[in-house]
Amino acid sequence: MTTIIASDNAIIEINQALNTILSQYLDIPGQKIDIRFDLPEINSIQSEPTVSVFLYEIHEDLQLRSAESRRYNPATNTLLPGWVNINCNYLITYWDASKPSSDSSSPDSQPNNQAAQVMTRVLNALINNRQLTGIPGAYTRVIPQQENLNSLGNFWQSLGNRPRLSLLYSITAPMKLQDIKDNITPISQISTSVVQKPSLDNSQISQALADKLCADLGGTEDIRLALAKVNLITKSTPDNNYNQKNESVILEVSGITLSTYLPKIKDILSIWVNKQESVVKVNGIGIIIVKENSDGLISI
Image (cartoon, rainbow, N blue to C red; front, side, top):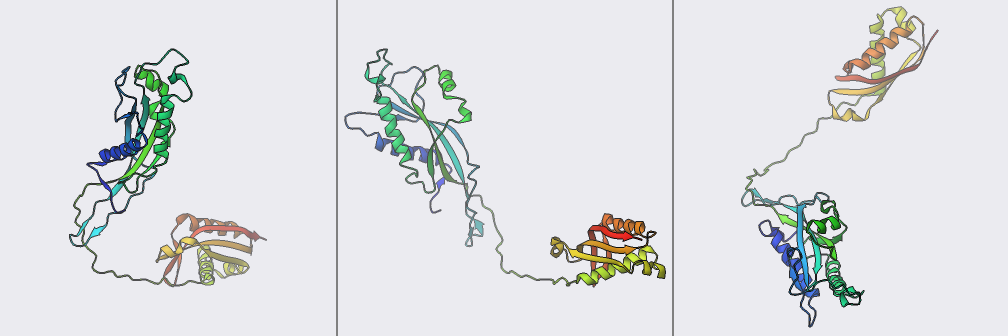
C-alpha cells in the first residue's frame, strides 16, 4: 500500500472525503442543501434543507484484521510503521427546513417529496463511490441497522423527536500506526543443518519386541516354545519424524499360545502401552508402544 492516512488525521480525512462525495451529488441548481457533520438541535427547524452526517461509532475492524507487516529499513536498522483497519459508522439523516404539514396534499406528503429526492441523491453518492478519493485501500458500504443503535425508533425517541428518513453507512480505512522506534539487529548469516534419523525396519522392531516379551515372561525354553506361534507386527505413527531419539509404533499381536501364558502376555502389553516410555532400543532409537491390539491372539 503506497499511501496510508496518519493516525493524527484519520477521522478528519475520512470526513472530508465523505463530504466531497456528498457535495458533488447534492449540488442541485437553484436549490441549496446544507451538509453538517453533527446532529441538529432537537425540534429545531433548519434554515435550509439539511443532510446530517453523524459519526456515532469508531472501532478497529476485527473481521478484516489484515495488516501489512512492518518493513525493515536497513539504513536505520528499524522497522517502518505498520497499519490497521478502522471502521467508522455513520447515521445519515434528512432534516426539513419547515415544520411538518398536517395537510396530506402538501408537497412533503407526496411520493416525490423533497426528503425522498435528497436521500436518493445521497444513496447514489454512497453506492457509486465504494472507494474514497485520496484514501487508498478504503472501502464503503450501506449497512443495516446496528445492535448498538438498539432500534431507530428508540433512537429518535431518546432525542425527543419523530423518526426521520435515514440510512446507515460504514467506511473501513487503513490507518498508519505511530512510528515506534524498534531497533532490529540485522541477520548477517544463515546456516542450517540436518540430522538424519536412522531408518528402522518394522521387522527389526517386531523381532526386538518379541525378544523383550520372551524376556519379560521369564526367558526359559518353555516360554520360547509358547511364543513360537505368536506374531508381533508393528506400524509406524505419523509423528515419528518429530523425535530423533524415539519412534512411536502401534503393536498388533496375533497367533496361538498356551492358555497359561495368554493373560500374562496381555498384562505385559498393557504395561508397555501405559508406561509411554521406551520398551526396547533398535539401532540406538527407543521404541515406544502407543497402542496395542491383541484381539487376534488366542489360547489352546
